[in-house]
Length: 313
Image (cartoon, rainbow, N blue to C red; front, side):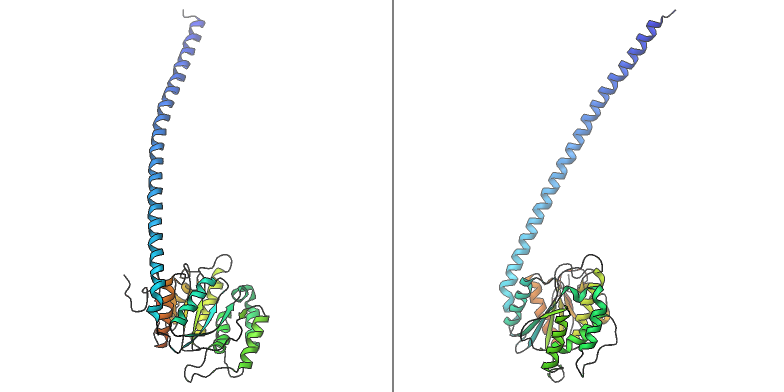
């Protein structure tokens, strides 16, 4: 008969064998797994280095292209706006460097900048929409008729357009200097705009904005700027809405315009005004507006071509 002691020893030996097998098996598996993970990690590191190198190369090429556009830009637009007047309208997210560079380019094209009207953050704030509507109606000069649309952007454009742009039919101001001063003062006191000193009405307008809007009410803010620019265009000889990278997205002012066929039939848009090339295109698009033509220009997928006259690849 097999003794109890023999059973205990046998069972202990069995568990010991199992434990040794598990340890040996797990060690072999761990080495295999570690070897595989190390190989994967090496591949990832190599891919990161390749992507970084590609990114650096692309950035260098873009920088070279921007320097080239900066140097040849004045020559490309020379005389395009000769004896024309241009008013600048900027939004709260416009970079001063982009505005100043564009102004210099307009002047290099022979144009005269008559002033700047900055739209404040409150201008596009959905929470201030009712207040903006009320002040627009109250400040409307005699002889200026507001559009039938009730959204704040269109209504504000219906007021500001005739103040900033002369009549394209007879080149005459559409409001008296006193009416213009009173209306701009009222919009300034309401916190909606800031006007440069001595601003005068012009033949053409550039509405310069930033990229895509973000956060709550992003779509409404973008729509307000888009509809404002579209209505301003209806008041004079031509307007271009120029935005920076991201402006052609769904929550960017340029993107909102491009989604509206009625707006794109009259208003030209540029989506890369942060670049020297984009600013050159903005001036060329403004000249094109004088000739009754429009376009969607830039780098975004919803642009029809890079610049006036260029073919999309």
